[in-house]
Length: 470
Ligand code: G6P
Image (cartoon, rainbow, N blue to C red; front, side):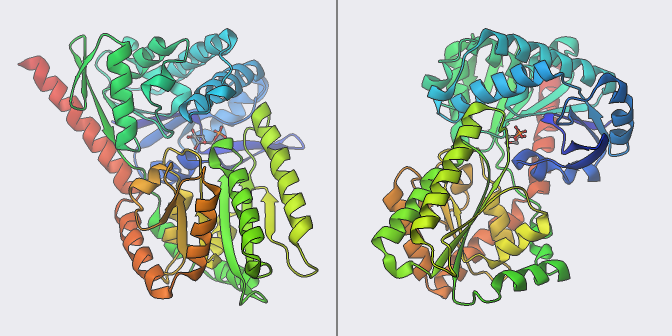
């Protein structure tokens, strides 16, 4: 009996250079969070390897991935355009992050979303054996629980959504809302990061489907579906230990040399309008305007990891960031100081670790975020218990990390004040807050998250069986 994880993207993706395929880790919370855990257990991961692979090379890719316990679902360029960029990232992503004006409700996107979810089901059926547990991940595969339930009525199916679930008033705007919900309730256990997401989902399902709820259980056609919050964690030990390695120590020295008196503010995100990157830059601009005493004394290290830049709103955002940073730096910089060190690229984990360990402040201000694991990675990297986390109240993580300096990301003055507070915070207070948050991130780590979800899935299945035999 194994666990079969199914997500749109595999935890590795293919990079093609001179006709050669190499596999590198994928970006984003799902892949980084779950990426190491699946290796340790008896599991297989099914998903897309990130590019269109021509038919003649699919066997080669399949074999290479099999060595890593991964099983590919190959998508054509048309499917990438309509299912991935289209329905997943131009309908579900903006609507679930409350940016409804960005949504394009195209029938062709929906048709392709349905057929690609069917395609994932077909691949799963090739791998699945009786008694395997199925764990489906995220918004790209909302229909898959229902499709698999029809094929395998007794299967154990869990579903976890890594992004927010919006309130009913937002969700109801989607033209195919009932079909989506019917797909989801094919699962036995549905998990979200926060209790608010659970609440929104239950109220949406009971208003749009012929189901009723008692507490966090939905009753539908003699099936019971349990809906619960499972806040995702990170590999705490990995981030904490990394800062002690020779390689990372060298990087830390490199960053710090010549900047002993400089206060470093760190920001790391995938390129995404939900992350509040422009707003963060505007808050920094406000700070430099209203508190000129910090000119030359603080530096923002801003890493934006390329993502979905074939979707128009993402490439537009990239251009806006380029422009804003260029303008801000040109106005405020001096010969040997620059306010924003901006990188549009990904970095090896050792460099990220050194930045986490070096930064006096970590600025995490998404407009909306399911969880946000960057905030937890920063905390796990602070072995001296110092440093200040500024965290948006719209991130799921703010429900756990209550000792962060919490801000409303729409309030630029609030972010600016938070930066000033962080810059002035006495070491003792930093340590008090950081120690409390480290204890939480250490305890509720990613292994805890996986074990907790799987344990609950088993319990839910067992209680369903005992209901049937009564
Ligand atoms: C978020 C989503 C993941 C997604 C990741 C990267 O973390 O929850 O499902 O994989 O972003 O986005 P991408 O579109 O590159 O897969």
